[in-house]
Amino acid sequence: MGGTAQIEFVSEKFVAAKKLKPQLVGTVQEIVLQHEHSSDTPESMNLLKNSAFTRDETQTSALSFVI
Image (cartoon, rainbow, N blue to C red):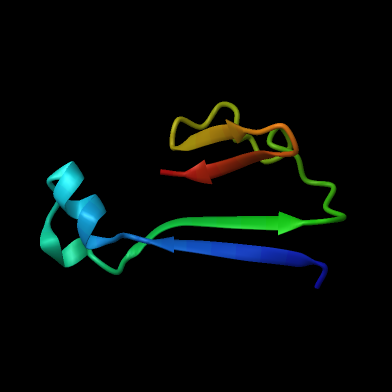
């Protein structure tokens, strides 16, 4: 409760642009969870040292996600 989730799926356009296998269309590409009152930080989750994660900063937020 108190948060949102955004799920991005692999599209045909993405598969063509990246020259990926066609069977990847429709699979999950990214999941972003946002919680208004979470005490977790990128540091507490060891995301800053994990090369499988990318940090995306905007003026209003900073998100970490798998690519």
